[in-house]
Image (cartoon, rainbow, N blue to C red):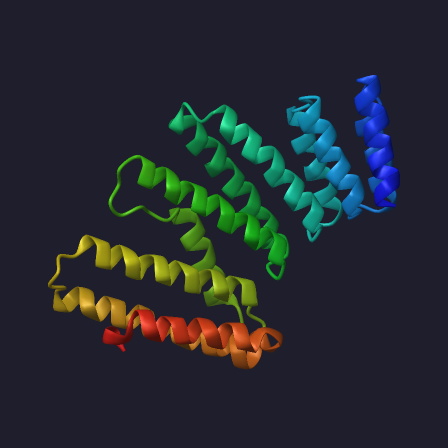
Length: 240
């Protein structure tokens, strides 16, 4: 199968004609929206022939409306987003606007299905981009998007313990780690008692969340969550 796709690529490249290729892959994806080879080929066509346009975002959004769990569609959206951000790299304000809009879009999709790893991974990538932007702007303590924090807290507050999404819990652990590092960055060598207590509380909460992941919410990855817990204990041992 790989050889067939490669053969088509060679022909299209030789002819220098991509006029039918997006429609061709779209028809393949109608039958199998997660066809890895079709997505890989579609990305090559878009990149090689510079077929970047807003319609690709619209196409991906259509697929996500059909199946919000479609990991391939989320990957394609990030593929397009990365190009768009690179185009706007000279204007950090424009980059922020794009990232903020994508975060809003993603939160809506997570709200439809909170137990969907793909959308949480996409959100994590968006937040990381914003934090990198803060660092590039010279901010010593980057900020987390307020709407993301509020969304996570609200979902935690309204979820039953036995129904809480493991991806939400894991995201909150990452957020707590971000807060701990920010507190340490903003403090002098001698951390105040108030700041020390703040970190202690975050560490305690995070270890409890990791324990819930390991023992109840995501027992398949128990070794991974236990490993993260051991890392927390090692990195913040003076606050335990």
